[in-house]
Image (cartoon, rainbow, N blue to C red; front, side, top):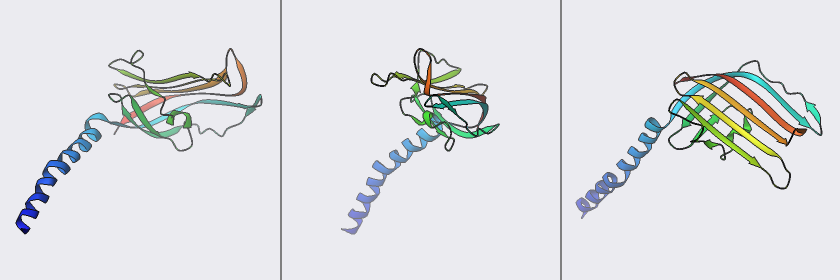
Length: 157
């Protein structure tokens, strides 16, 4: 009886746990590209039409995991680039190619009339990166708007 139970546990482990582990390991090593990135740039934010001064570091370092085959990325930049943590920013297959992965979200809120465009473009060969975000009321109203653009380079880990 005990031998049968042990055999069933071993069979369960072989049939369930090993394939599950293989999928997880495969996803982590074959699909995800991990980078350490360093960028610099500018940021403008307005509240009630008045510019809000931000303490932007001269150089910003962060980690990035890109899943271009899965249409998304993960960015860890602390409190910076919060707009880029939005799950609506996905791979744009029309703008991307075999060298550059372009992740993009471009939406207009029908009630507030705010247009929000957020993008991250990563050259997967050179590591060059562009991080862009703009939220405004078209055609060019700056009241309560945001705009930032950072460029730099990422090194594969």
